[in-house]
Length: 202
Image 1 (tube, rainbow, N blue to C red):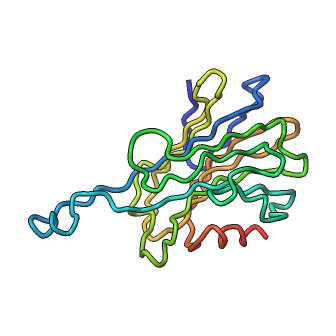
Image 2 (cartoon, rainbow, N blue to C red; image 1 turned 45 degrees about the horizontal axis):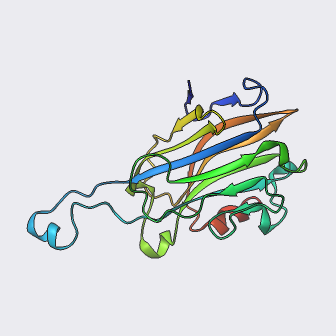
């Protein structure tokens, strides 16, 4: 049974699941359905969801919450960490459909010892140019699954109003002694690109 988290909550991941080393982190979202505006609406695409291209990424941080190199950012342009401990499923352009939109597989036992924290980010591709923000997205969530058993371990729904925000710090996996914990962050920022989010950790 998955633990459902609220914003700001932290939970042990590995302590309560002895032997757990491989996890799948699923991130999902849906476009807000636009209200149809009669004949004009149907002519100009009313009634369909806004085509907002969200991208999930993982930023690997060392002590003091710093990014050491560009290769420590796992996203659609760099799908695998150098050591192979983190693997991204690839880009989903629409967010339509049920379930996870993008997935990240993590082998916690292979994450280098100098990496203390994995920050999961979702940002809107080309948000400023397209004049898009997270008020156009609904049902955003992050979940952690044991891929060996398909058991859902942690689930966090992002329920805040993120209108005007262009990137979300969704959650963090971080070391606590020999164990790993998860924090439900759910913070929206006005960073216009993943690069800007990464800069905030440099």
